[in-house]
Image (cartoon, rainbow, N blue to C red; front, side, top):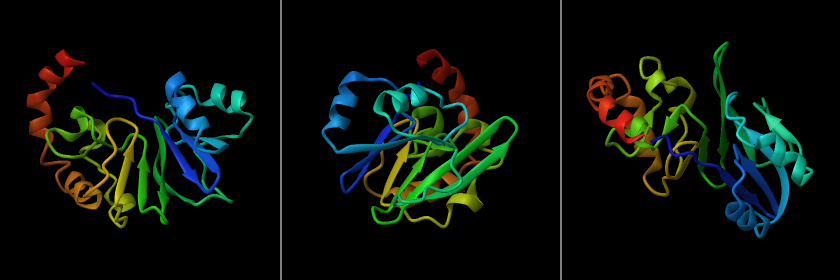
Length: 179
């Protein structure tokens, strides 16, 4: 139901793994992309296999970074609460927004839309943090990457976060059964 997604982002000959998990086939594909530069963990509880993969690849683990010098990424603070710490990445050159949890495309997030706000953030969506970004690509930690219309999908997700709460409540039993 929550569809875990990880990303490998390549810039020139360097590759950053974002919230990765150990998947042999995916890691073989990553190896062909270029030299591993780091593992980035965008959500406090997305431990997944970040530390183990950083160690195996001999690269730094960048857990909830506040900046990423010598990379093409701008760190976007999303939340910093006792129970939820999350940052996103903006890659201006690629017009890509990478969001671990606050926005997703998996069914519990999207509720029939292309993207949606995390169910627990619907009352307080990260509008101020994300609405100024106009991505062509939206890469999320749960669900498929949006390769077109990403800015419109992000706008729609943020605009309907609260008004979709009744839809979430009516779909919740079906979502739980399918999970």
